[in-house]
Amino acid sequence: MEIKIEKLSKKFGANHVLKNINLLIEKNKSTIILGKSGCGKSVLLKIIYQLIKNDEGSIFYDKKKIVDIDKFGMLFQYGALFDSLTVAENIAFIDFIDGKKNYKNKVINSLKEVGLSADIYDKYPSEISGGMKKRVALARALFKNPKVIFLDEPTTGLDPINSDMINELIIRIIKKKKMTAVTITHDIQSALKTGDNYFFLNNGVVEDSGKCNLMLKSKNKLMNEFLLGVKKLQNS
Ligand SMILES: Nc1ncnc2c1ncn2[C@@H]1O[C@H](COP(=O)(O)OP(=O)(O)OP(=O)(O)O)[C@@H](O)[C@H]1O
Ligand SMILES: [Mg+2]
Image (cartoon, rainbow, N blue to C red; front, side, top):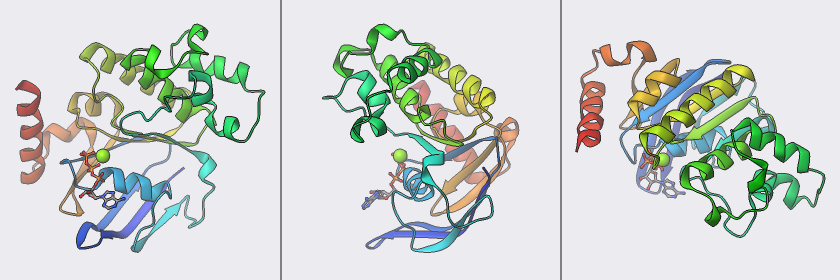
């Protein structure tokens, strides 16, 4: 699915988070959203996903203003698994709350797809590792076979080896399923590995954008400051 955003703005009280966002998420490509903490990246994803409403501007999903949000899957920042539900109930969450019970095979397939064993089917989130939780959250985002997947910081909190494994998994799945992916990340290495296009948000607007493989050659001053800041953080 292609998603086009025009003149989008969003305020929370006096906090004008998104002022004038214009961007194009290309069909079957991997788009990366970058920007400092608090600049509105998660808010932007939630607006596209229609969890919160924008004040002004338009979003066109394959050139239409109306979209079936069942076509979307989201891996939320912080994973957000329900601690009181099992792995299977978390993955099949939509079916589970609808009282549907015939999801077992589908869940087992989803577990395999993200490289997890069926042994954890009945386990609770507290009984599995951080890397496994991310995979379970990814399996949940993929459960309905979405056309578009939104990934809000999929590798945050993981060690480099687990981050690499999750990145490779994400690339493999989005290529195999021909999905459109939109990823928020502070991890530049991940962005370079997994992204086709990037958009750098700053002060409520898209300050810089381009192809990910040219990101490090950007001539934009604020983008370069951002990249330098991220690098310093990683080395500290
Ligand atoms: N539901 C809400 N009500 C009021 N303010 C909100 C709400 N959601 C987000 N904000 C505010 O909007 C701004 C952007 O938040 P957002 O979560 O999008 O940042 P972010 O770019 O994702 O940051 P991070 O990289 O730390 O995750 C922040 O100032 C935040 O406090
Ligand atoms: Mg965020």
